[in-house]
Amino acid sequence: MNSLPVSRRAFCRSALVTSSLVVAGLPPGALAVEDRTPTNLRVSHDGHGDHVEPCLAVNPRDPRNLLAACNLEGGPPATYSSFDGGRTWRSNGLLPVPAGIIEGGNLTVGFDGAGRGFVCALLVALPTASGAKGLSDSVGVWRTDDGGRTFSAAVAVSGTGAVDKPSLATEHRSPNAVHVAWTEGTTPPLTTALNYARSTDGGLTFEAPRTIANDSRGLGDAMVACGPPGFVYVIYHHAGASVGSSTPRRTGTRRLESPATVTVLRSQDGGRTFERPIQLGLTTFSIAFPGTDSDTLPAIAADPDSGLVCAVFSRHQVGARHADILLAASPDGGRTWSPARAVTPQDQIIYFEPQVAIDSAGRIGVMAFAIAHGKVSVVLMLSEPRSLRFGPPITITNHPFDPAKSAFGRRWYIGSYQALATTPGTFHSLWNDTRTGQLQLFTAAVQVSM
Image (cartoon, rainbow, N blue to C red; front, side, top):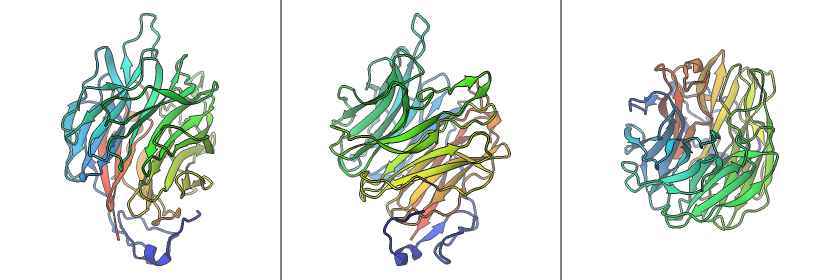
């Protein structure tokens, strides 16, 4: 892959302490690899059954403080926190939900520059009298001032309607800025508008929502990221045949893959205005595993210091036994982008549900699920510092797990996304798997030292 500017001497001083895989294709001596797989730690010991769609954030005021959240079937979201850099975790219980809300989903978490934590979720309401689900859902944000031990009541970000997949991001260099985006429509499950709202008072209140993109053919799956002060990015699927639907089109019992365009919007003024959309490439909206009910969404990360922005998404040819994770990067704050190129090898493995993170040294980490022979593993691809050159996948999970053991009333459902975050010298992966017989949350720390 193409490289961003980086000195060979600076790269050759770096050493990687992660797993037993040999990092082929990089200069000899560039990386030292320890002969072990990262320790897998179970995060969820809360007595609940299946956990899906975990999210993870690091407190910029205290990198030892990590905050996680996930969706539980048929109830409010659950949160977890660590105060020792992810070595141990505590359950914070269920988030308090407003009256009339039966469950929360599509969670994201973040910390602002003052160290306040936030959890954003889709608030699923009781069906209306007509029985139309989704027409009275909304978006809510909870705040914690103590690292995740306690949370305030949810603040309403949107009015009720047919909303889907909200996402939250915070500015680490601005103490009060919180940004939320979601998609909305009038005939669920199709969503046709990308809506946005921001808070400038630390999540106490949000400005009135406004539409920043729309298309009658459909758009959805928004994710927000913040870079240097004032820079806000929103990535989403655009104009796919069933974009915005949590259940892609079916013919009988066969799932059809729906192509969509991965698109990014940028703001340079803290969300006051957004520039014209930039298209990064085509993706397949959902990967057609036999009998699966899992989707795969795009993801984006931005470095608050250098202006580097990275977007990842999956691409799968119908019937193929391989799916790539593609990465597009911008070294200039989102003004120009590299072509989207695969960071995964050409093998007989399907990679899906990518996440991306950028550490303080400019290394890019891309995490994904990898399925082969009916079993799923978690893998991590790491780049050279300030470069788009990646080593081969590092296996994070101790052993593959069987996705058929997942529940939620669906066969082979493990959610639509997992989580990846960084602290100085470490990439933190958070995912769900079925090694206990249920979907529980696990984490692993991949250490990268100079």
